[in-house]
Length: 313
Image 1 (cartoon, rainbow, N blue to C red):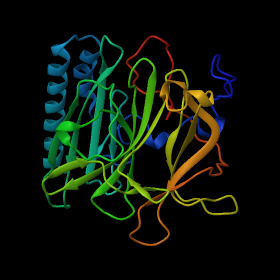
Image 2: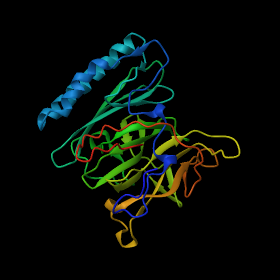
Image 3: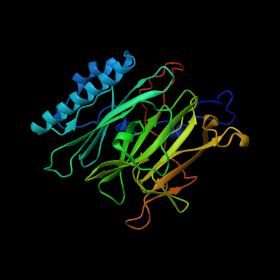
C-alpha cells in the first residue's frame, strides 16, 4: 500500500483496486489461436509519435491509422480475425469479435495530449469491416455527462476495457484513461453505439439515483491514482454480480468540493451493475464491498515525463 501522499491528507492507493485484469491490458488483444494478426510492423510508425512535433504528429498518426486499416483488411481476406499481443498501443475487442477499437496518443507542449484511433466494426459474421478513424488534438476538456458525440467530435482517451451493454447488442461500454492536463487525470466509462448512420459516443445506459447518464467520468488529482475495472460475476459467499467497479472520489477538504485537482480515492468503492429486470440500464451502487485483490498491472502509455509515475487502471 502506498502511504499518505504529501499534501493530500487521507488519500491512499488501495491495494484492492490498484490495477485491472491483465487480460484487459493496454497491449493488443491476446489470443490462443495460431491464426492471428501480428501488428509488430506498426511499431516504427507508432514510435514516430514520441519524437514528432506539431503537424508532423497528426500526419504520422494518420499514416499509422491507414496502415492499420490495410493490415486489418488483408487479415480479413486471409481469414484472420484475431490480434496478436503488442505493447505499443491500446487495442481491445468485443467478446463476439464484431468490434475492435485501437487508440494511441502523443504529448503536446502545454502538458495535454493528442489522441487518435481506429474503430473496426462488423455488423454480422459475413459483413465487411466498417472503419471509423478517431482524432482529438487536445485532451484538456472533458466530455459532457449527458451529451452524445459523433465520431468527429470524439473526446480522446486510451481504451483498455470493453463491456457489452446489458440491453443493446450494438452498444458497448468502453473503459478509458485520459491524462487531461497538468493538474487532472480522468478515467471514463464511455458507451459507444454502432448505428446504421455511424457510431455515436454516449448513450443513456447508466442510471444514477433515478437519473440517466450517457457516460461516467472520474476526475482526480494528477498526483494520485484511481481504479476503474470490469469484474465478471463471482459466485459464493463473498461473490458479487457482474459489475464495473471504481474508486469513490472525494476532495481533500470540504471547501475544495468541485475542484477536480484536489480529488482522490477515499478508500470506498462504487459500481455499475446490470438492472434487476431484463431490458433495464446499468444501476449505480455506492459503497460496494471489494473482497479479492486484483491481479498485476501494466502502466498506461503516459507521454508525460514530468513525474515518471505509472497510471494504473
